[in-house]
Length: 104
Image (spheres, rainbow, N blue to C red):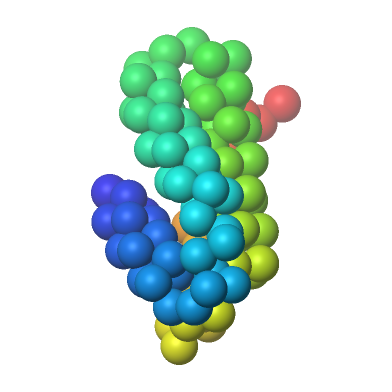
């Protein structure tokens, strides 16, 4: 839930900081939509069989990786390092959860 609030706030901040950041708005909007979609899919798969749950984790981790890449390219604000740290922490946590849930 914290990631959803963070991503919405980051998109608003990034698109308002400079013309260069405004040029990233399509990527930021797509990343935000994707993170919301994959988070919902992950929540819906919480009680699903392992293959469905693992697929949802993989999609969400890929989505977070995309968010990290978009932020690295587009974030020019004063909170860039905090945004990067929060995104990296979320990515690490979901990767850990995926690895635990999808052990082979």
